[in-house]
Amino acid sequence: MYKTIIDTIFAPRKQAAAQHSKKSHRFFLTLLSSCAVLVLTMGILVSCDDGAVDETVSFSQEGRTVKLTASVTGLETWPTSLYVALAAFDQESNYAITSRRITSGDGSLSLVLTGISDEATSVELCVLNNLRQRVATFAKIEGQQLQTETDTIPFNAGDISLSMLSAIQTAVFNTTCIGCHGENGSAAAGLFLTEGRSHESLVGKTSRRVAEKMLVQPYNGEESVLYEVLTTDLSKGWHYDHTGEILDQNRRQLILEWINNGAQDN
Ligand code: HEC
Image (cartoon, rainbow, N blue to C red; front, side, top):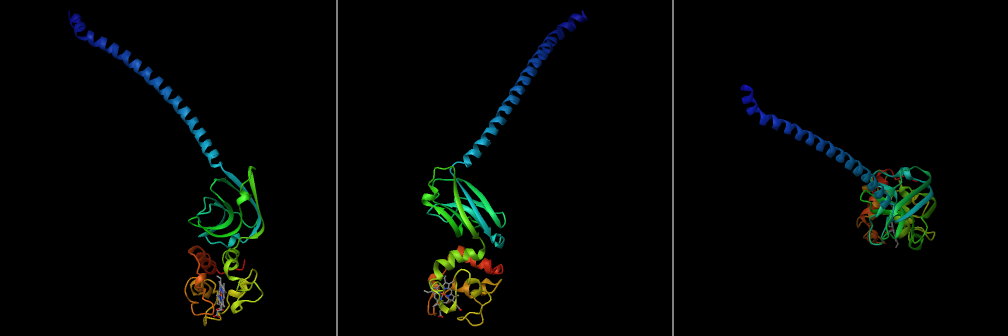
């Protein structure tokens, strides 16, 4: 009787328990298969991810490729705020579209710049500042030279000095000064700013115009007459007013850094 009572009381529970265990068995199976599916999916995802990475790499290799070869000197003269790079530009902007810093030392150089987009109109061996703005250009290829069907466009810069003084010579002295300062054999104020002579004419030399000041006083840009002439109206009353020669911010920085780093002759 007790048994009956017990059965009556517990039977439904037992059934329920049996059902429950069946349910949980099924649940466990479902869980297991879900896990399997999950693991599989993750596996697929991971392998997809691999594919995506490959795609990015090939994406960055779209566009043109330029290979620079040169025999270089002067790379060790640069401070950290300015650096030599191979960079692509369009006509409108001073900011490099794509660039690659040149980190190797002096000697023979071989460097490839990839992913040069269609808007690039020149590829330059140049100096960039920390904003990737062009400060000076040593050599470049442009126009037709960049319109080629070949895989890699060659850019041979030959034997070239990439020093700070070379950058100043190219970007400042050769462009606007030497017409009066030495190109024709004679130099205004006896100041030769031509290649090979500019360093000895400037560094440690006393100014003819400004009493007791040097044209370039190593490690002291602000006190150097050269820097003052190119950044202030100091020369307003001179036989030639140089205020039209006042430099943009980037080339000022170039001259200042050169002097403040010792105004080296290389
Ligand atoms: C159109 C001619 C002309 C151009 C271009 C010119 N200069 Fe001069 N420069 C002169 C003359 C002339 C003097 C002498 C002025 C005087 O004695 O009153 C002079 C004097 C100087 C002096 C002072 C020399 C001293 O001993 O004190 C410096 C420095 C100088 N120039 C730098 C430059 C630089 C750098 C450039 C280019 C960015 C440049 N000049 C472009 C004509 C020119």
